[in-house]
Length: 415
Ligand code: SAH
Ligand code: SF4
Image (cartoon, rainbow, N blue to C red; front, side):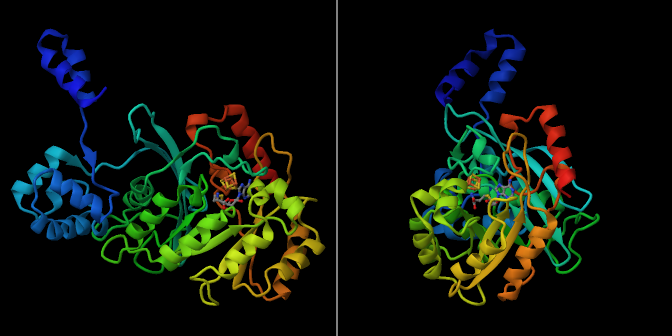
C-alpha cells in the first residue's frame, strides 16, 4: 500500500472498527531510519524536512557524531541539536535498527544474530540475514553479509543453495555493525558486554569486519563500497580500512576497482590450484580463470608486504588436500604478498564433501609453513551454534529440525 492509499484508509477510519483503524495506522508507519546512511543520505534527509543547504553541513556532522560515534537510539539524546529540529526529525524519521529475531551465544564466546530486514522496495518481503561475531583476546571480528543468498553456486557452500537473492543496501550492511555494537554495548558510555571469550585488550569489542557472511560482496559492489566508507570514517564507527576485509570468489573486474576506489584488505576464495578443479568448486573460475585472478591480485593497488592478500583454502578430503596441492599452492602464490588461510570444511546436510583428516591438514599446513607462511589453519568457531563459515543460511529458508540435528552431529564428528 502506498502513502496515498494509507491516508485515504485512515481518513475513512471513523467508520471502521477500532482494530482495523489501528492496523491501518501501524501500516502507515512510513518513517525511514537515518541509521546506516552516508553523509549524502543524511544531507538529503535534512533537506527533505526543510533544513537549508547552509545549515546542512553542520547538522550532518552532529547527526554523524550521535548516530555512529555514540550509537544514539533516539533523537532526544542529541543534546546539542535544538529541540525544534529534534522534534522535526522524530516526526519524519527514526533511528531504528533491523529487528534481532534470534541471538545465540556459543560457549567459546562467538555470537550469532539473525536480523530481519524490512523490505527495501515496494513489493519486496522481509528477509533474514545472519551475522557472526568472533571474539579473540586482542580483537573482535564481525562477519557480515552483503546479499541475501548468493547467485554463485560454489559446490561446497551452503549459502549457494539458497534460492532467494537480493543485494543488501549499504545502510543494511552498516546496520549489521551497529546492531552488533548495540548488543555488545560497544559505544562509549554504554554497559559493555561481559562474558567468556570477549576481548580483554583495547577499548572496543568490534574492531574488525570481514565480508564473509552470505553473498558475493563484489556482486553487491556499490553497497559494499559505500558501506566501507561509512564504517571506516574516523569521526564515526572508526573501523579503519586495514581492519576491513572483503572476501571474493574472484570477480576479477571488480577487484581492481575495489582496490583503486576503496582500498580495503582483500581475501580470495581460492580453494584449488588447477583450473579444472576450481571450475568445479568455484564455478566463476570458468569466467575468470586462475591466471587472470592471480594477475588481478598481483596488481591489487593496496597490497604490500604489510597488507597481504589472504588466500582462503577449504580443506576437502581427497579433493584438494594432497601434498602436491600444497606445493603447487605455494608456487602459484610466489611474488604475491600473501597469507594463506586453511579452512576446515564445515559440512552441511546433503553435501558430497567431507572435511580432510586432521593429519592431512597438518601435513598440508607444514608444507605451506616451510614456504614461509605462518599459522595458516583457521580454527572452527561457534560450531555449536552453526555459526562457522559456510553454515550461514537465512531463516527464510529454514532448516528442518531434522536437518539441524544432522548438521550438529556432523559438526561434532568433525571436531
Ligand atoms: N562469497 C564470498 C564471501 C562469503 S563466503 C566468497 O566466496 O569469498 C566466505 C568464505 O567461506 C569463503 O572463503 C568460502 O569459500 C568459505 N566457505 C563457504 N562454504 C564453506 C564451508 N562449507 N566450509 C568452509 N568454508 C566455506
Ligand atoms: Fe557464494 Fe561465496 Fe558461497 Fe561461493 S562460497 S556460493 S561465492 S557465498
